[in-house]
Structures are given as C-alpha cells and as structure tokens.
Length: 247
View 1 (cartoon, helix red, strand yellow):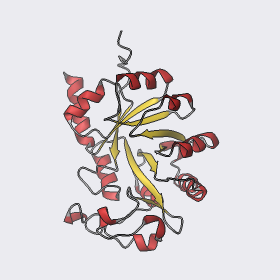
View 2: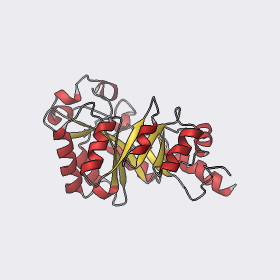
View 3: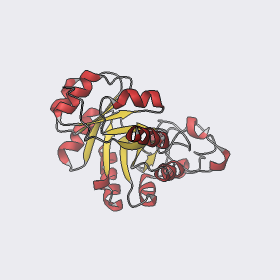
View 4: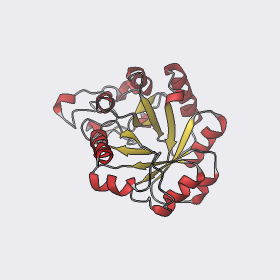
C-alpha cells in the first residue's frame, strides 16, 4: 500500500506574497486579488523598521520592488511609506504603498487567513512583541500561522505562545525538525521527495510545498499529498485541482 495514499487530504491554496503572479507582491492589491481568485490563505513577508513598525515586504532593502534603495531595518515607516511598491509591476498599480502589517490585516476580508513569514535572521524580542500586539489588535491570532527560515525563532514562538507555527525549509533537510512541537513544515518543491514527504506525514506534521506555479510542478508535488500548496498563481492551482476532481 502506498503510504502517501491519503485521499482525505485536499490541499488548501496559499497565495504567495498574495497573487504575486498578477499583482505587485506583498501589497494590498495582491492580497485583494488573491481572495478574489478564491485563495483561502495568503503568505506574506514581515520585517521591522527602525521605529519598530511591522511592514510587509520580502527583501531586506526596497530597490527591487520600488526602484529606490533603502534598508528596511534602517528607515522609519514614514520614510518607507513614501515609496511606490506597485508601479514596477504595472502602471495601474503606481503608488501602491508598502503596507503596515496591521493595516493589511485590518483591510482583509473576514474569512481571510494568513501565513506570516518573519524575516528575522537573529532574535528580535521587539519584533515578536509587536507581532503579538498586532495579532491581538486585529483578532488574527487564530487565523494565521507564523513561519520562518529561522528555526530557533519558530521553536521559541511555539514554546511560549498558542500561535500555530511552521518551519520553512529551502536547502537542506534534517529529520530533527520532525522531533519538535512545531506542527508545520513548509518545504521547497525542489527539495521535497517521497521519503521526506512520508516522514513528515508519519510525524503528524502538516506538509506545505512552495512555490508551485505550473501544471507540471502541480502534478509532481500532488503525489506527496501536501496539506497546502503555496503559489504565485492561486487561480491556476484552483483550476488544476478542479480538473483533477472531474477526471
């Protein structure tokens, strides 16, 4: 019997940085579009500014998504808020701002859920404190998961809060991750294989796979029965899933 044959698992669709294949990533526009495409969840990246505000942006500097070079951690939100985070993608999104996390969550639909990836390469107590404040103020603590490549940070969050947490794994796999209380493993599609998938399922953890953007990739990773598929194109994955149900 195939150990991965678990037909009860129907993966959720997670829009990577919002619907980032069709709108500027990590913006109000990308999150809104993702939900209009039917994505149940959005994955967003969070960093802290010099005045301890949590902003939604992937890179440590702003040049790729605004055309202006500023270090996120060395500038205040007032300074970052003046940048255009949408015009690089399409002119119709010119002047789309870099969002504050709290404003993005406040603006989200009532049914929205978020995978919040913390971009922190060292322990930052002030970031964690601000994150808890934002989640409490926006009532999103039970409608989000907290993920990071910083596994020690995730283990700390898991040990002292009731927030659901997940490891992000991109380059090297370790079975050590299966022996902790962290309930989710989010793994690069290039790294996942049958053996790793079986081990994750047997451990009782959820398997999330990123970033799946076309039918060939979808067909390959579907055999591993992921609980979540993270994609830049939620509308495509929804279509592929529907095709599979009707065949």
